[in-house]
Image 1 (cartoon, rainbow, N blue to C red):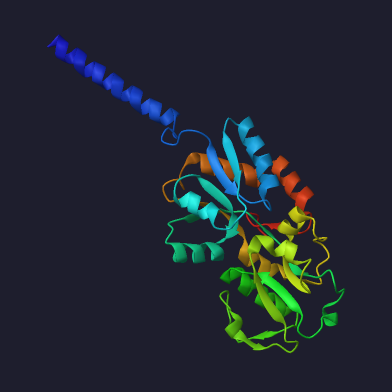
Image 2 (cartoon, rainbow, N blue to C red):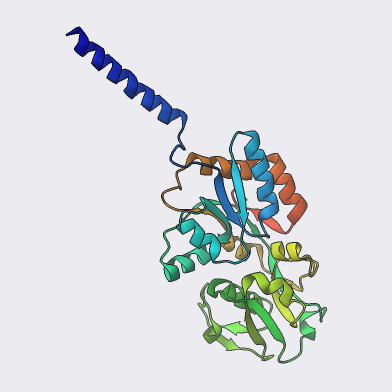
Length: 274
């Protein structure tokens, strides 16, 4: 009888030890550092967040990608835990086209965009047939079309939304030639075309042109529709390390200082109330 009681006591002790171990190590299933994918436009403030995370005992590895496809594919494959480079409209298109199961878990910043030219000082100086570079993906191409309409350079069908295409153009009085350029190559396109849709975070990274020199700015209300999200796989969205890293990015004074230093008045912090 005493032997049986001893066995039961030992079993309860081992069970309790196992539970305490699981509580003390919530990320035991995820060994190694938290891997976060991004691109050059957003890397600098994230690097500060990584340094701040280390002070809190959180090991984070930042991985920089040079194309808009790999950050989502590697996330879906479990090679990284989180990415931060895209707005939800872009993510929706990628999920549909590639059948990826990914979810936005937190909001970040959004950078202003505008129309840029190295050849002309005013939009009214653009010649007929001017070559205009827009982002090649469907959502950001539509964003560029709406920006051109807001600038008075063309007109879209009433109700043309965030998936607007060339077929939605009903008036193009200057016969603009619209070119679809890979998103990450847009800054370089400023050197080759008459006008380009510029994303200020990429222009800052490239140094091609002063990002504050836009000939026409996207409105703040329009920009806010394209907020950048932290995105995770459903299996890792509740990882406490993800929540901790996002909180550092959003609340650390050091990260805020880097955001302000890098982007100045060219961005909005969307987790804050207006």
